[in-house]
Amino acid sequence: MTLTREESIFLWVLVVNLVLAVIYLVYGILFAAPAAEKDEERENGAYSSRRTYLFQFIILVLYPVVGFVFFFLAKLFYKTVFRFRVNLDDVIFSKDRVDTQVKADEEQGRNIIPVEEALILNDKKSLRTAMLSIIKGEAQGALSSIALALDSGDSETAHYAASLLSDKLNEFRINVRKMYAEILDGSGEPGSEEALLDYMNSFLKQEVFTQVEQNGYVRMMAETADMIYENDPSRLTAEQYEGVCLRLMEIEEFEASEGWCLRLAQQYPGTLCAYTCRLKLYFMLKNREAFFQTLHTLKKADVVIDSETLEMIRIFS
Image 1 (cartoon, rainbow, N blue to C red):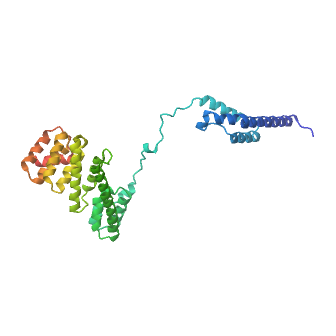
Image 2 (image 1 turned 90 degrees about the vertical axis):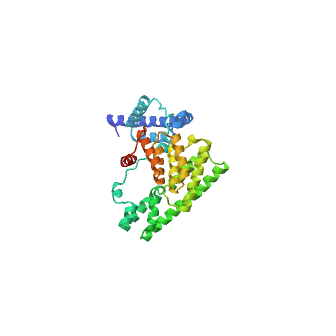
Image 3 (image 1 turned 45 degrees about the vertical axis):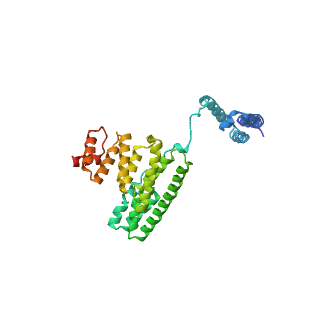
């Protein structure tokens, strides 16, 4: 059988392509791959393994000439365009640095009313929806609303509220007992007093405990603040001073509250709470002279006033 000139050329191309592919495979498996495994490129996952050369050999056999041209151009492109190694030493990939922004569910938000309104309307469906929303979210800041739901005529809602409130208050009691004991025996970490102060205030300002228990915890909170004040008053923030003042007012410990109000005014005279705490205290004590004197001082002070305080100034001016 005589082959035409075109068929002979094609056959020779196949033979030469196969020979070159075999040479490439042998070179890759016996020399290139072992050398690359010891090279520093292995650390970046950029080296070619024996399996890679075998895969490339199959491509070269199945696609004569085209396979060689493709791999040649790919190698040339890699060496010219990506010849510089990227320095990633200053790049930190950490999940702790990622702040995921979740889009608000506006449709769900429009269909949920506050617990207080649901109780007034006696709407069981809305009340249950509001309670489930609180349970799935951050319940610690909504304990007062949960406590209101205890008086609901809906037994299911009352059960949800009682279970959640009981769990949160028991967790608070255990944590406070542990943190306070560590502070007294000196085993607490630096800043544990301030942490206890903030933690207690976040619960006590919602007034969800019985009166006896509330009074005891407020006094413990004041004692903790006293420990900090005796060691280093500068560790106390204006917000922490304000929390102690207001909690003491609520349990009618007016003398102790006034002492903390004066400490606040002395250490943070340029803050709004240094005035509002005293105004609330003197108003509760019905001390007209001290109230208007503090109000007059506030109007002259260079302090940023919020809308609530501004309205109070307009009423009493």
